[in-house]
Amino acid sequence: MIKESELPTLSSLLAFEASVRNQSMTDAAHELGITQPLVSQRIRSLEEIIGGILIDRSIKPLAPTQAGLKYYHELKEPLEAIRHATMKVKSDVQEPRTKISISVYFGFAFHWLMPRLQRLQEAFPDYLFEVLPTNSLKEVLASKADILFHFSTSTGQYQFEKLLIPEEVYPVCSPDFAKKYQLKSGDILESLHNLPLLHKDKGDERWFDWQNWSEKLGIKPPNHPVTFCYHNYPLMIEAAVKGHGVCLAWEGLINAFIDEGELIPLGPRIKSINRGYQICSNYYSTFAVGNVINWLIDEVETPNV
Image (cartoon, rainbow, N blue to C red; front, top):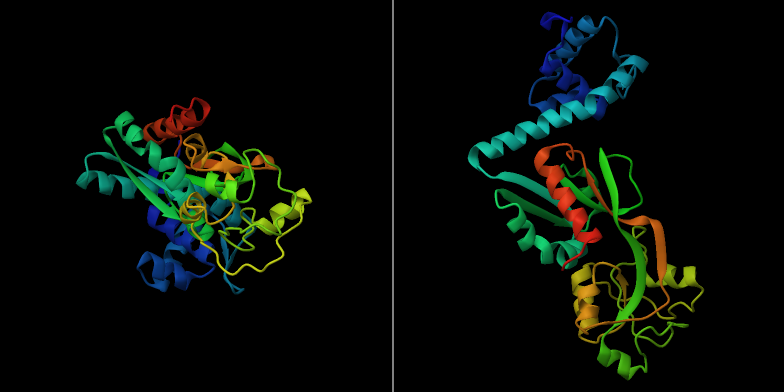
C-alpha cells in the first residue's frame, strides 16, 4: 500500500499541469498566483517523488519529457474534476440549490432549449439552471459548463457525447412570401437567382450557407453578393416570418413555426447521419448532471413540446 508521504502534493501537481499546458513556468506562475521560482520548486519536489525528470528545461518553449507527457495526460481530467468540484461546492455553500450550467449556441438556446426551460425547472425544482448562450466556437470549446451543446460531428474530447438531433437543412419562408413568389409547401427550388435570400453568416465552416448548400445540391447558386448577415439565428428566423426572404432552417429548431403556420418548408433537403447537435459533458457520471442530460435526451426521443 502506498504511503501518504509517497504521494505528491496537490500544489506540485497543479504547478506541473499548468506549466506543461502553458509551455511556460512563468505563465503557470501567473495563472496560479505564485512566483516562478516556487513553480519550479514544486515541480522539482514532484520529480523527486516520481524518481525521474518530467520537464525538459533545456529547450524553449518548455516541453515535457516522454514520461512527463504521459503523466500530464493522466492528470488533466482528475485535476479539472477537482477544480470543477471545488467551484461548485463554493457556489453551493452560498446557493443551497444544485447549480447546472449549460453552454449553447443562440439559435439552439432560443428555439429548442428556452421552450423547455419551464418544464425542465419543474422536473428539477431543487436545481438552479444557468444558460450560457454564445455564437463563438472558441467560447463553446473553452467552456467548463456542466452540459454543452455542440454543432458538429463527435468531438471525442468529452466523457459523454451523444448526437441529439442529426443535421437536416432546408429552405423556409412565410406563407405571404410563398404566395408572392408562387411557391407552396414542399416545392423544390431549382434556382436561387430570383429569390431574396436571408443570410446568417458568410463562409462559416460550422454550418451551411446559401452558397455551399446550393453547390452541394447542384442548384443554381445566388447571383448577387451578400450585403447583410444577421449573425444571429433567431433574428434571421424573425425576418423570414415577417416575409423578408427565404432562409435556411435546421430541423429541430423551427418545427414550431411550421406547425403554427408561420413558416412553410421548401426543398430540397440536406441530411447528415453523423453531424448535428451534440450533447456533451465531462460530468455525466454525477447524479445531478446525468439526470438532466437524460431528461434532455428524452425530449428528443419522446417529444411532448
